[in-house]
Amino acid sequence: MEIVIDAGGSSPRTYEIRATRAGRRVEVATRRGLVEVSEVTRSGTPVRTARFMSSRILALVEHPADEATAVAGES
Image (cartoon, rainbow, N blue to C red):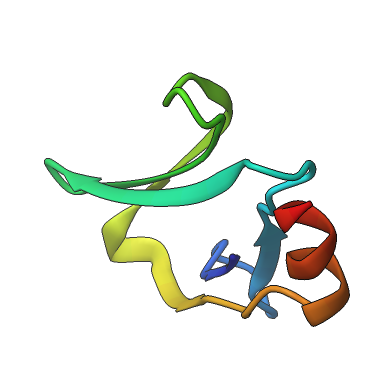
C-alpha cells in the first residue's frame, strides 16, 4: 500500500506499508478523520501501523502481490 500525502511543502510525501512476511496482510481503516494503515498477522495482531489525517491524503495506491511472493506464501 502506498500513501501519498500533502506535507505542506512543495512536493508530496510518499509512504509505503507492505506485508513483509508470508501470511501477513495490509488493512486500511477510516476513523474520525484519520486513515489507519496496518500490517497484521494471520491472527489479526497489528505488527506496524501508520496514521494519517484524511484531509492530507492525496492518494492511496494498493499494489497487487507479486506472483512469486504469492506462490511462495501458499506453500
